[in-house]
Length: 442
Ligand code: GLY
Ligand code: MN
Ligand code: MN
Image 1 (tube, rainbow, N blue to C red):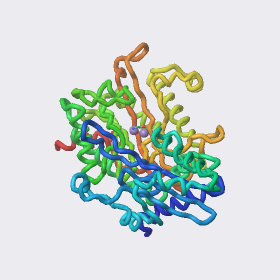
Image 2 (cartoon, rainbow, N blue to C red):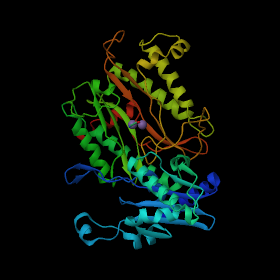
Image 3 (cartoon, protein in one colour):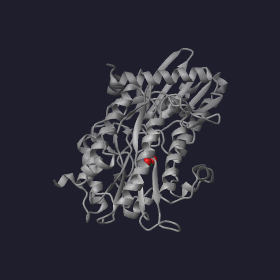
Protein backbone atom coordinates (compact mmCIF):
# COMPACT_ATOMS: atom_id res chain seq x y z
CA UNK A 1 0.00 0.00 0.00
CA UNK A 2 1.34 3.36 -1.00
CA UNK A 3 1.95 5.95 1.63
CA UNK A 4 -0.71 8.58 1.11
CA UNK A 5 1.84 11.28 0.35
CA UNK A 6 3.39 9.13 -2.36
CA UNK A 7 -0.05 9.35 -3.95
CA UNK A 8 0.11 13.14 -3.88
CA UNK A 9 3.65 13.05 -5.23
CA UNK A 10 2.44 10.81 -8.03
CA UNK A 11 -0.21 13.41 -8.93
CA UNK A 12 2.47 16.11 -9.00
CA UNK A 13 4.55 13.93 -11.32
CA UNK A 14 1.51 13.54 -13.55
CA UNK A 15 1.02 17.31 -13.66
CA UNK A 16 4.71 17.80 -14.52
CA UNK A 17 4.35 15.29 -17.36
CA UNK A 18 1.27 17.17 -18.60
CA UNK A 19 3.20 20.48 -18.47
CA UNK A 20 5.94 19.02 -20.68
CA UNK A 21 3.34 17.69 -23.06
CA UNK A 22 1.50 21.02 -23.19
CA UNK A 23 4.35 23.54 -23.36
CA UNK A 24 7.60 21.64 -23.25
CA UNK A 25 7.85 22.25 -19.50
CA UNK A 26 7.50 25.23 -17.21
CA UNK A 27 6.68 26.26 -13.69
CA UNK A 28 3.38 25.50 -11.93
CA UNK A 29 2.35 27.52 -8.90
CA UNK A 30 -0.83 26.56 -7.04
CA UNK A 31 -1.85 28.40 -3.86
CA UNK A 32 -4.28 27.16 -1.23
CA UNK A 33 -7.29 29.15 0.01
CA UNK A 34 -6.98 32.12 2.33
CA UNK A 35 -8.54 32.15 5.77
CA UNK A 36 -11.72 34.23 5.82
CA UNK A 37 -12.98 36.33 8.73
CA UNK A 38 -16.53 35.61 9.86
CA UNK A 39 -16.68 38.39 12.40
CA UNK A 40 -14.02 40.35 14.23
CA UNK A 41 -11.49 37.74 15.50
CA UNK A 42 -13.48 34.68 14.42
CA UNK A 43 -12.71 32.90 11.18
CA UNK A 44 -14.91 30.68 9.07
CA UNK A 45 -13.91 27.03 9.51
CA UNK A 46 -10.87 26.70 7.26
CA UNK A 47 -11.23 24.77 4.00
CA UNK A 48 -8.17 24.21 1.79
CA UNK A 49 -8.30 24.83 -1.95
CA UNK A 50 -9.21 21.59 -3.73
CA UNK A 51 -6.55 21.88 -6.49
CA UNK A 52 -3.82 22.62 -3.97
CA UNK A 53 -4.90 19.78 -1.70
CA UNK A 54 -5.14 17.36 -4.61
CA UNK A 55 -1.46 17.99 -5.29
CA UNK A 56 -0.18 18.17 -1.72
CA UNK A 57 -2.49 16.75 0.95
CA UNK A 58 -1.22 19.70 2.98
CA UNK A 59 -3.94 21.03 5.29
CA UNK A 60 -2.66 24.45 6.41
CA UNK A 61 -3.52 27.90 5.03
CA UNK A 62 -0.79 30.21 3.68
CA UNK A 63 0.82 27.59 1.47
CA UNK A 64 1.76 27.27 -2.20
CA UNK A 65 2.87 24.29 -4.28
CA UNK A 66 5.49 25.06 -6.95
CA UNK A 67 6.52 22.46 -9.52
CA UNK A 68 9.34 22.78 -11.98
CA UNK A 69 9.27 20.79 -15.22
CA UNK A 70 12.73 21.93 -16.37
CA UNK A 71 15.36 20.93 -18.89
CA UNK A 72 17.51 20.43 -15.80
CA UNK A 73 15.00 18.08 -14.17
CA UNK A 74 11.89 18.15 -11.99
CA UNK A 75 11.51 19.86 -8.64
CA UNK A 76 8.66 19.62 -6.14
CA UNK A 77 8.55 22.68 -3.88
CA UNK A 78 6.24 23.72 -1.08
CA UNK A 79 6.01 27.11 0.62
CA UNK A 80 4.38 27.02 4.05
CA UNK A 81 4.21 28.80 7.40
CA UNK A 82 7.17 28.56 9.72
CA UNK A 83 6.97 27.02 13.17
CA UNK A 84 5.89 29.70 15.64
CA UNK A 85 5.54 28.81 19.29
CA UNK A 86 3.45 31.85 20.15
CA UNK A 87 0.96 31.24 17.31
CA UNK A 88 0.89 27.51 17.99
CA UNK A 89 -0.10 28.17 21.63
CA UNK A 90 -3.12 30.15 20.39
CA UNK A 91 -4.06 28.46 17.13
CA UNK A 92 -2.50 25.01 17.22
CA UNK A 93 0.14 22.96 15.50
CA UNK A 94 1.95 23.99 12.32
CA UNK A 95 4.19 21.61 10.40
CA UNK A 96 6.86 24.13 9.47
CA UNK A 97 9.16 23.59 6.46
CA UNK A 98 11.35 20.80 7.90
CA UNK A 99 8.54 18.47 8.93
CA UNK A 100 6.48 19.36 5.86
CA UNK A 101 9.33 18.36 3.57
CA UNK A 102 9.69 14.99 5.26
CA UNK A 103 6.03 14.16 5.71
CA UNK A 104 4.54 15.49 2.47
CA UNK A 105 7.32 14.28 0.20
CA UNK A 106 8.62 17.55 -1.28
CA UNK A 107 12.18 18.10 -2.53
CA UNK A 108 12.43 21.62 -1.12
CA UNK A 109 10.25 23.48 1.39
CA UNK A 110 10.62 27.20 2.16
CA UNK A 111 8.86 29.65 4.45
CA UNK A 112 5.88 31.27 2.73
CA UNK A 113 7.46 34.66 3.44
CA UNK A 114 10.12 33.80 0.83
CA UNK A 115 7.62 33.16 -1.96
CA UNK A 116 7.78 36.55 -3.71
CA UNK A 117 11.54 36.56 -3.46
CA UNK A 118 12.01 33.03 -4.87
CA UNK A 119 9.34 32.93 -7.57
CA UNK A 120 11.16 35.11 -10.14
CA UNK A 121 14.16 32.77 -10.11
CA UNK A 122 11.89 29.75 -10.43
CA UNK A 123 10.00 31.35 -13.34
CA UNK A 124 13.07 32.52 -15.28
CA UNK A 125 13.73 30.83 -18.60
CA UNK A 126 10.64 28.65 -18.37
CA UNK A 127 8.47 28.35 -21.47
CA UNK A 128 5.21 28.61 -19.54
CA UNK A 129 3.74 29.48 -16.18
CA UNK A 130 0.88 27.23 -15.07
CA UNK A 131 -1.29 28.76 -12.36
CA UNK A 132 -4.96 29.38 -11.58
CA UNK A 133 -5.68 32.49 -13.67
CA UNK A 134 -8.48 34.74 -12.45
CA UNK A 135 -9.17 32.70 -9.31
CA UNK A 136 -8.58 35.64 -6.98
CA UNK A 137 -7.44 39.15 -7.84
CA UNK A 138 -4.84 38.93 -5.08
CA UNK A 139 -3.22 35.90 -6.65
CA UNK A 140 -3.41 37.43 -10.14
CA UNK A 141 -1.55 40.49 -8.81
CA UNK A 142 1.09 38.30 -7.26
CA UNK A 143 1.64 36.37 -10.47
CA UNK A 144 1.80 39.61 -12.49
CA UNK A 145 4.37 40.93 -9.99
CA UNK A 146 6.51 37.83 -10.45
CA UNK A 147 6.39 38.11 -14.23
CA UNK A 148 7.36 41.78 -14.08
CA UNK A 149 10.25 40.92 -11.78
CA UNK A 150 11.51 38.38 -14.31
CA UNK A 151 11.09 40.82 -17.20
CA UNK A 152 13.05 43.44 -15.25
CA UNK A 153 15.99 41.05 -15.36
CA UNK A 154 15.93 40.61 -19.08
CA UNK A 155 19.26 42.42 -19.48
CA UNK A 156 20.88 39.80 -17.27
CA UNK A 157 20.00 37.33 -20.01
CA UNK A 158 16.93 35.61 -18.61
CA UNK A 159 13.55 35.35 -20.32
CA UNK A 160 10.07 35.47 -18.82
CA UNK A 161 7.56 32.71 -19.67
CA UNK A 162 5.83 33.35 -22.99
CA UNK A 163 2.65 31.60 -22.00
CA UNK A 164 0.44 31.78 -18.95
CA UNK A 165 -1.69 28.66 -18.77
CA UNK A 166 -4.64 28.17 -16.43
CA UNK A 167 -3.43 25.09 -14.58
CA UNK A 168 -6.99 24.24 -13.65
CA UNK A 169 -7.65 22.97 -17.18
CA UNK A 170 -4.98 20.29 -16.82
CA UNK A 171 -5.96 19.50 -13.23
CA UNK A 172 -9.67 19.27 -14.07
CA UNK A 173 -8.90 16.46 -16.50
CA UNK A 174 -6.88 14.66 -13.85
CA UNK A 175 -9.49 15.17 -11.13
CA UNK A 176 -12.31 13.86 -13.31
CA UNK A 177 -11.05 10.27 -12.99
CA UNK A 178 -10.64 9.31 -9.35
CA UNK A 179 -7.84 7.03 -8.20
CA UNK A 180 -8.31 4.15 -5.76
CA UNK A 181 -7.39 6.34 -2.79
CA UNK A 182 -10.04 8.90 -3.70
CA UNK A 183 -12.68 6.26 -4.31
CA UNK A 184 -11.99 4.72 -0.89
CA UNK A 185 -12.51 8.12 0.76
CA UNK A 186 -15.67 8.77 -1.26
CA UNK A 187 -17.00 5.33 -0.33
CA UNK A 188 -16.60 6.28 3.33
CA UNK A 189 -18.17 9.71 2.81
CA UNK A 190 -21.13 8.00 1.13
CA UNK A 191 -21.52 5.48 3.94
CA UNK A 192 -21.51 8.14 6.63
CA UNK A 193 -24.09 10.21 4.78
CA UNK A 194 -26.25 7.11 4.19
CA UNK A 195 -26.31 6.39 7.90
CA UNK A 196 -27.14 10.04 8.62
CA UNK A 197 -30.14 9.96 6.27
CA UNK A 198 -31.39 6.77 7.91
CA UNK A 199 -31.00 8.47 11.29
CA UNK A 200 -33.01 11.47 10.05
CA UNK A 201 -35.80 9.16 8.90
CA UNK A 202 -35.78 7.37 12.25
CA UNK A 203 -35.92 10.60 14.25
CA UNK A 204 -38.47 12.65 12.34
CA UNK A 205 -41.97 13.16 13.81
CA UNK A 206 -44.82 15.56 13.05
CA UNK A 207 -44.41 18.70 15.16
CA UNK A 208 -40.62 18.77 14.95
CA UNK A 209 -38.84 21.62 13.19
CA UNK A 210 -36.69 21.12 10.13
CA UNK A 211 -33.62 22.28 12.06
CA UNK A 212 -34.07 19.50 14.60
CA UNK A 213 -33.65 17.00 11.79
CA UNK A 214 -30.68 18.97 10.44
CA UNK A 215 -29.10 18.53 13.87
CA UNK A 216 -29.53 14.75 13.60
CA UNK A 217 -27.67 14.77 10.29
CA UNK A 218 -24.80 16.86 11.58
CA UNK A 219 -24.57 14.70 14.71
CA UNK A 220 -24.12 11.60 12.58
CA UNK A 221 -21.63 13.25 10.20
CA UNK A 222 -19.35 14.45 12.96
CA UNK A 223 -19.51 11.38 15.13
CA UNK A 224 -18.14 9.30 12.25
CA UNK A 225 -15.21 11.64 11.72
CA UNK A 226 -16.48 13.77 8.84
CA UNK A 227 -15.02 17.26 9.08
CA UNK A 228 -17.99 19.20 7.78
CA UNK A 229 -21.07 19.20 5.65
CA UNK A 230 -20.11 19.21 1.98
CA UNK A 231 -22.72 21.96 1.38
CA UNK A 232 -25.49 23.54 3.46
CA UNK A 233 -28.07 20.84 4.24
CA UNK A 234 -31.47 21.27 2.62
CA UNK A 235 -34.16 20.06 5.04
CA UNK A 236 -37.33 21.00 3.20
CA UNK A 237 -40.74 19.92 4.43
CA UNK A 238 -44.13 20.30 2.78
CA UNK A 239 -44.12 23.05 0.13
CA UNK A 240 -40.48 23.92 0.85
CA UNK A 241 -39.48 20.79 -1.09
CA UNK A 242 -40.36 22.71 -4.24
CA UNK A 243 -37.69 25.35 -3.49
CA UNK A 244 -34.59 23.78 -5.04
CA UNK A 245 -32.02 25.59 -2.91
CA UNK A 246 -34.15 25.96 0.22
CA UNK A 247 -31.95 26.69 3.23
CA UNK A 248 -33.96 28.29 6.03
CA UNK A 249 -34.67 24.88 7.62
CA UNK A 250 -36.97 26.47 10.22
CA UNK A 251 -40.49 25.24 9.41
CA UNK A 252 -42.47 23.15 11.86
CA UNK A 253 -43.45 19.91 10.16
CA UNK A 254 -47.05 18.74 10.08
CA UNK A 255 -48.65 15.33 9.96
CA UNK A 256 -49.06 14.43 6.31
CA UNK A 257 -46.03 16.41 5.05
CA UNK A 258 -43.23 14.97 3.00
CA UNK A 259 -39.69 15.89 4.01
CA UNK A 260 -37.01 16.28 1.32
CA UNK A 261 -33.47 16.14 2.69
CA UNK A 262 -30.49 16.93 0.47
CA UNK A 263 -27.42 16.57 2.68
CA UNK A 264 -23.98 15.03 2.60
CA UNK A 265 -20.80 15.15 4.61
CA UNK A 266 -17.29 16.05 3.55
CA UNK A 267 -14.89 13.34 4.64
CA UNK A 268 -11.15 14.03 4.43
CA UNK A 269 -11.68 16.49 1.62
CA UNK A 270 -14.25 14.48 -0.37
CA UNK A 271 -17.95 15.23 -0.74
CA UNK A 272 -21.01 13.08 -0.67
CA UNK A 273 -24.40 14.31 -1.87
CA UNK A 274 -27.58 12.38 -1.04
CA UNK A 275 -31.23 13.30 -1.35
CA UNK A 276 -34.10 11.33 0.11
CA UNK A 277 -37.76 12.23 0.48
CA UNK A 278 -39.97 10.61 3.10
CA UNK A 279 -43.28 11.06 4.93
CA UNK A 280 -42.97 12.90 8.25
CA UNK A 281 -45.51 10.55 9.84
CA UNK A 282 -43.97 7.43 8.30
CA UNK A 283 -46.66 6.61 5.71
CA UNK A 284 -46.90 7.99 2.16
CA UNK A 285 -50.37 9.15 1.12
CA UNK A 286 -51.60 7.75 -2.20
CA UNK A 287 -50.71 10.89 -4.23
CA UNK A 288 -47.32 11.22 -2.50
CA UNK A 289 -46.59 7.59 -3.25
CA UNK A 290 -47.66 7.99 -6.89
CA UNK A 291 -45.21 10.86 -7.39
CA UNK A 292 -42.49 9.07 -5.42
CA UNK A 293 -42.79 5.94 -7.56
CA UNK A 294 -42.34 8.00 -10.73
CA UNK A 295 -39.15 9.61 -9.41
CA UNK A 296 -37.87 6.25 -8.15
CA UNK A 297 -38.51 4.64 -11.54
CA UNK A 298 -36.60 7.51 -13.18
CA UNK A 299 -33.71 7.20 -10.73
CA UNK A 300 -33.41 3.43 -11.23
CA UNK A 301 -33.55 3.86 -15.01
CA UNK A 302 -30.80 6.49 -14.80
CA UNK A 303 -28.62 4.23 -12.67
CA UNK A 304 -29.01 1.47 -15.25
CA UNK A 305 -27.97 3.89 -17.99
CA UNK A 306 -24.62 4.84 -16.42
CA UNK A 307 -21.71 2.73 -17.67
CA UNK A 308 -18.38 3.21 -19.45
CA UNK A 309 -18.47 4.50 -23.00
CA UNK A 310 -21.87 6.14 -22.68
CA UNK A 311 -22.04 9.95 -23.10
CA UNK A 312 -22.51 11.80 -19.79
CA UNK A 313 -25.68 13.42 -21.12
CA UNK A 314 -27.51 10.14 -21.76
CA UNK A 315 -28.87 9.55 -18.28
CA UNK A 316 -30.35 13.04 -18.24
CA UNK A 317 -32.29 12.08 -21.37
CA UNK A 318 -33.44 8.90 -19.59
CA UNK A 319 -34.63 10.98 -16.62
CA UNK A 320 -36.59 13.33 -18.88
CA UNK A 321 -38.29 10.44 -20.62
CA UNK A 322 -39.32 8.48 -17.52
CA UNK A 323 -40.41 11.61 -15.63
CA UNK A 324 -42.43 12.91 -18.59
CA UNK A 325 -44.09 9.50 -18.96
CA UNK A 326 -45.00 9.56 -15.27
CA UNK A 327 -46.33 13.11 -15.43
CA UNK A 328 -48.61 12.11 -18.30
CA UNK A 329 -49.90 9.14 -16.29
CA UNK A 330 -50.50 11.37 -13.27
CA UNK A 331 -52.48 13.72 -15.51
CA UNK A 332 -50.16 16.65 -14.84
CA UNK A 333 -49.10 17.17 -18.45
CA UNK A 334 -50.65 16.22 -21.75
CA UNK A 335 -49.39 13.33 -23.87
CA UNK A 336 -48.30 11.82 -26.07
CA UNK A 337 -44.77 11.32 -24.74
CA UNK A 338 -42.94 12.44 -27.88
CA UNK A 339 -44.91 15.68 -27.96
CA UNK A 340 -44.21 16.31 -24.27
CA UNK A 341 -40.48 15.72 -24.76
CA UNK A 342 -40.47 17.91 -27.85
CA UNK A 343 -42.34 20.79 -26.22
CA UNK A 344 -40.54 20.48 -22.88
CA UNK A 345 -43.86 20.71 -21.01
CA UNK A 346 -42.39 18.48 -18.27
CA UNK A 347 -39.86 21.21 -17.40
CA UNK A 348 -42.51 22.94 -15.32
CA UNK A 349 -42.06 20.07 -12.84
CA UNK A 350 -38.48 18.97 -13.57
CA UNK A 351 -36.14 21.88 -14.20
CA UNK A 352 -32.64 20.71 -13.24
CA UNK A 353 -30.10 18.27 -14.61
CA UNK A 354 -30.04 14.60 -13.61
CA UNK A 355 -26.63 14.92 -11.95
CA UNK A 356 -23.10 16.28 -11.89
CA UNK A 357 -19.51 15.21 -11.25
CA UNK A 358 -18.75 14.67 -7.57
CA UNK A 359 -15.37 14.67 -5.82
CA UNK A 360 -13.49 17.15 -3.68
CA UNK A 361 -16.08 19.71 -4.73
CA UNK A 362 -19.79 18.92 -4.63
CA UNK A 363 -20.15 20.08 -8.21
CA UNK A 364 -16.74 18.71 -9.01
CA UNK A 365 -14.09 19.70 -11.51
CA UNK A 366 -14.27 18.41 -15.04
CA UNK A 367 -15.82 19.30 -18.36
CA UNK A 368 -19.20 17.90 -19.35
CA UNK A 369 -18.70 18.56 -23.05
CA UNK A 370 -15.62 18.63 -25.18
CA UNK A 371 -15.64 19.93 -28.75
CA UNK A 372 -19.42 20.00 -28.67
CA UNK A 373 -19.77 16.34 -27.67
CA UNK A 374 -20.86 15.03 -24.27
CA UNK A 375 -17.90 13.52 -22.38
CA UNK A 376 -17.89 9.71 -22.53
CA UNK A 377 -18.12 8.03 -19.12
CA UNK A 378 -15.06 6.04 -18.02
CA UNK A 379 -14.20 3.92 -14.99
CA UNK A 380 -13.27 6.06 -11.98
CA UNK A 381 -15.56 8.96 -12.81
CA UNK A 382 -17.93 9.76 -9.93
CA UNK A 383 -21.30 11.39 -10.48
CA UNK A 384 -24.65 11.94 -8.82
CA UNK A 385 -27.95 10.55 -10.10
CA UNK A 386 -30.74 12.81 -8.92
CA UNK A 387 -33.99 13.14 -10.82
CA UNK A 388 -36.89 14.87 -9.08
CA UNK A 389 -40.40 16.31 -9.50
CA UNK A 390 -41.53 19.59 -7.96
CA UNK A 391 -45.25 20.21 -8.23
CA UNK A 392 -45.98 23.79 -7.24
CA UNK A 393 -49.64 24.72 -6.89
CA UNK A 394 -50.91 26.37 -10.05
CA UNK A 395 -53.18 26.12 -13.00
CA UNK A 396 -54.00 22.56 -13.98
CA UNK A 397 -52.45 21.08 -10.83
CA UNK A 398 -54.98 18.95 -8.88
CA UNK A 399 -55.03 19.79 -5.16
CA UNK A 400 -53.89 16.28 -4.22
CA UNK A 401 -50.51 16.88 -5.91
CA UNK A 402 -50.05 20.56 -5.10
CA UNK A 403 -46.90 21.21 -3.06
CA UNK A 404 -45.38 17.74 -3.46
CA UNK A 405 -41.64 17.80 -4.13
CA UNK A 406 -39.59 14.61 -4.44
CA UNK A 407 -35.94 14.07 -5.33
CA UNK A 408 -33.90 10.89 -4.96
CA UNK A 409 -30.12 11.27 -5.24
CA UNK A 410 -27.31 8.72 -5.04
CA UNK A 411 -23.56 8.96 -5.71
CA UNK A 412 -22.02 6.41 -8.06
CA UNK A 413 -18.58 5.58 -9.37
CA UNK A 414 -18.38 4.27 -12.91
CA UNK A 415 -16.85 0.75 -12.92
CA UNK A 416 -15.67 -1.54 -15.73
CA UNK A 417 -19.21 -2.62 -16.51
CA UNK A 418 -21.64 -0.28 -14.78
CA UNK A 419 -21.63 1.51 -11.46
CA UNK A 420 -20.86 1.04 -7.80
CA UNK A 421 -23.47 2.92 -5.79
CA UNK A 422 -21.56 4.65 -2.97
CA UNK A 423 -24.78 5.56 -1.14
CA UNK A 424 -26.64 2.29 -1.61
CA UNK A 425 -27.24 1.87 2.10
CA UNK A 426 -29.69 4.77 2.22
CA UNK A 427 -33.31 3.51 2.41
CA UNK A 428 -34.91 4.16 -0.99
CA UNK A 429 -37.89 2.00 -1.98
CA UNK A 430 -41.27 2.91 -0.50
CA UNK A 431 -41.09 -0.16 1.76
CA UNK A 432 -37.52 0.61 2.89
CA UNK A 433 -38.32 4.25 3.57
CA UNK A 434 -41.52 3.51 5.49
CA UNK A 435 -39.69 0.91 7.57
CA UNK A 436 -36.92 3.39 8.42
CA UNK A 437 -39.29 6.28 9.21
CA UNK A 438 -39.99 6.77 12.90
CA UNK A 439 -38.01 3.63 13.76
CA UNK A 440 -36.16 5.65 16.39
CA UNK A 441 -39.36 5.47 18.42
CA UNK A 442 -39.92 1.75 18.28
N1 GLY B 1 -26.67 19.29 -3.15
C1 GLY B 1 -26.45 19.95 -4.36
C2 GLY B 1 -26.84 19.14 -5.51
O1 GLY B 1 -27.56 18.19 -5.37
O2 GLY B 1 -26.40 19.36 -6.59
MN1 MN C 1 -27.80 17.10 -3.54
MN1 MN D 1 -26.23 16.78 -6.37
